[in-house]
Image (cartoon, rainbow, N blue to C red; front, side, top):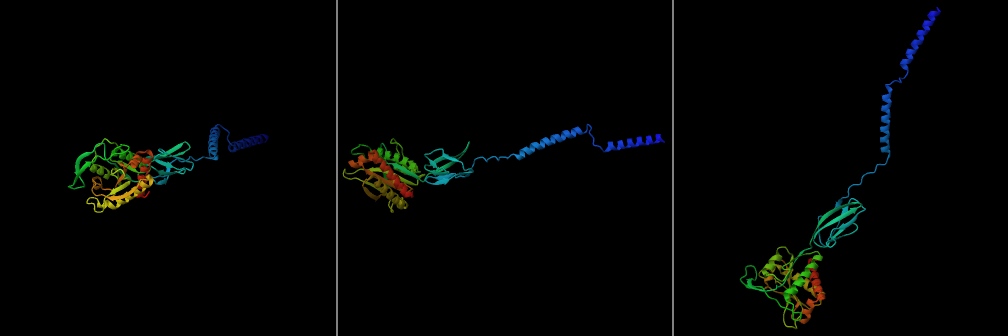
Length: 338
């Protein structure tokens, strides 16, 4: 009996051990990869958590223009803008345009200019075409040698006139008229360009042979007005300036009379105010070849009498010429409403 009890106890213990072995967690080799895997996941998750916790700084957008203008007329202004506030503005040519601290561009001379915006280490630029106010034609009268050949006084005219007359000369300075008109013409061009105009000269030197018809035709191609520069000759006591323009009965350019008169009035008034030269007023002339072939408003300015000592000396002096140029330019400004 004791022997049977011992066997029963033994089998019970074995049975319990088997049951315990099935229910206890396994600590065998199969758990190691799982632990390693969990470790890797924990490390990766930790890294991702670290990136998420840190404040992520957004990259600033590239510097670029948000408001531009491809063309700008001289004398006008336009404000350029970019997508930042901390900007320094500049232009590629300060003679042609100026720009303010807030990006307002003012066009001064015709041509092209680059508007530049700088922020930190970044810069962007935009090219702007500066359009002239108007195109002014200037005809410095005469040339080093006259041309006694003839040409029609107007389109289709049977009346023939000398192609280019010789002109007068200074009673005191001995300066020929062709030289004086070119001096004023070149200086006037510079002044008008500074004011935002484009200028076309019929000649820029004395050694040319350009007829009065050819001069008018050259200016007709692109100009808005034509200003013809001359000087008078008469008795030594006669002095002063005048302007010649076509009448309303001109057989060739009657339609230009009103605008030519307005241009003439603006020029002579400003010219005499600036120089102090006597104002002899306006004269209607329908026999001038260079006027009769014009297709644009035209005024012929007789700047003074070279046969008068006072006028002659004044027109060749530095101060006198500066005032003459300023006066003509002011008259052109007035005519166009600037």
